[in-house]
Structures are given as structure tokens and as C-alpha cells.
Length: 175
Image 1 (cartoon, one colour):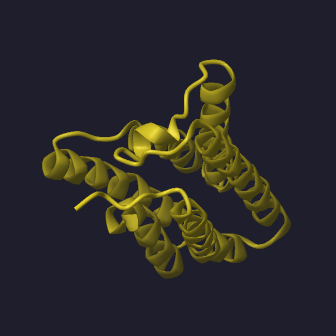
Image 2 (cartoon, rainbow, N blue to C red; image 1 turned 60 degrees about the vertical axis):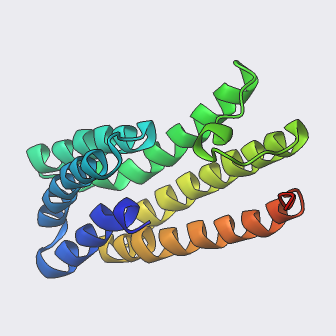
Image 3 (tube, rainbow, N blue to C red; image 1 turned 180 degrees about the horizontal axis):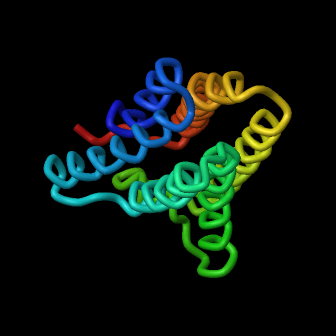
């Protein structure tokens, strides 16, 4: 989990220390380090991490190149919308429960996978809207605090709630 939040936490520290442009550069470098570490440790990098890297490179690069912080503020909104969109398209167009690929080993009835997918689609949509609202209606400092601590807190709360909900459907292995 720390590896997933490594670039975000370094972004926060760099922002508080040197501002948005240094923080953006640090996040890009930290994302490269994250991918290298995952490849070294696991032998592979998940598609989710490649997608996140591509978006930080695109929006972070635009922020640095154009010296305009608006691009980096759009990054989480686009990422959340993309994640939610991928889950929705996977379900609606391809009839797949893409979360099942991320949660290998978890066996759930089809109806539960469907509800879980739509819960995450809704969560990502709410996170996209929340990021957009905070990014463009509050100061950059408030947005960074929300992006880091609000985002982590909301993800953690949602994941724990999902865990409690899913626990009803998990069975104990036979001894």
C-alpha cells in the first residue's frame, strides 16, 4: 500500500516545502521510481500503475512545461473518471467484472461482482467530482491537502466498508 501512495506522499512533502511545480516534478520522478520498484519486486507492473503514470506524465508534464498548475489539478479528476469509465465499459460492453482481475482469489456470485463494480464506478465518479470542485473552488493549498489526506481517507473508508459488505459473501475454507 505504501508503494501505491509513495508518489502522492512525496508530492505533498515537496509541495509544502517548495510549491506546486517542484511537487509536480517530484511526483513524476517518484512515479518512475514506483514503477521500477514494482517491476523489481514483483516482476511486473499492473496496468493501473502504468495508466496512473501516463496521466501524471501527461498532466504533470503540461504543468511544468506551461508553468500552469491547472493541469496537475485536473489529473486526479481525469484518473478517477478513467478508472470508473473502464469499470463501467468492462461491465456494460464486455460483460466482465474487471475488479475480479484485481482481486484474484476472491470468489463471489455474479450479482455481487456487479454490485461491487457499480459501487466502485459510483465512488470514482464522486471522487472525480469532489476533486474538480475542490481544485477549482479553493486554494491550491486546500486542494493539495484534500487530494492527499481527503483522498486517502475516503479511499480507506470506502475500502473498509466494501470489506465489511463483502465479508458476508466469503466462505471459510474446509479444514
